Image (cartoon, rainbow, N blue to C red):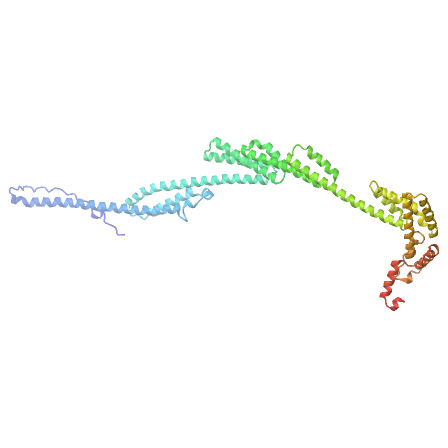
Length: 502
């Protein structure tokens, strides 16, 4: 930039002085005085012009200095903006924790001072530097004020975040350690300390401080009770509520009381449901459980009635099952009695162990009389069943004569049964004489392995002897093999080739 000349470049300012009359010169006429007056006027005009030039130069220099100082101040203001809100260098970018942890209160004033020195060094003279310095000092105060306000604002924001984080963290800790009273107590102490610190920072009144402590404690106790209820530890939840309800705000206390009471009822109800599952199928256990539930004064009436209805339903199911099982049992006993009766009427004796089982099974039931009647029938028919055909015919004739003489119901029934026995025995003697002999105890029950005839010599000999004995005693056909054995041999022969048949 071209440099304008200053008043110093013109040398020392001339001091105009009025002209003194020459000694001995005394103008007397107008013609003689005219040159002097002209010179005097010229000197005066020259002095006035010099003053005007000096003033103009000084004014121009002042303007130049002011302009240079303003330009320098603009540069400083630009640097100030960069240090304040610049994307890279501005302190406004430091937020919360970063602002608190930084050394911006010393670094940024130093950077601002360095900018002042750099810009000031580029000025031309002391006047410019003086003008710039006065402006820079005012701007420096503004910059420091902005920096301080930002630091205070971010520290406050950081403190609020720390307070909120502390509150949230300790509530989560209470949820995680809800079964540890010491851990929960530590969280409450930290919360109270955080509230005190925040109250001092924000200048809370005592009422607000106490209200915030109550709110924090209520949140922690609600978290502990809620976690206990979620874990179905309703007894623990009830005990915690009873111990700490004075530390909980009334509204939250009401809600927790309902939850705890409902949870206790659920626990009682679920406990009885578990007992009901264990007692399922046992009538005595169900009766004991029914008495316990009916006498419990802690569980509400609705749940009590529901449980008693479940118990009654299970008792009814057991009763119906018992009746069904009894009916099945009786039908099984009936089948046993019928099978044994058929054996007796066919002329065979029911084995002692089988008869004993029937007597035990029918004991105390409506079938007991039938079993006793069967036992009497077997005793009454034993001699008849074991007698040879001729003796049986004689006994039947005598019984028929007695019935004709005195036709009682028992006599008629006995005659019918004896005839049935005789007919069944005659049929079996014709069809399976060896089987009849075995059933009557007249021959051993030796099995015959017909797949290996060569090894069944002794068994076949016994069969032949038994068959011959039946021919002699009962006039039976000679049949050493039983019907099923005959069918087996026939099947083998029909399928075998000639060498195997031989």
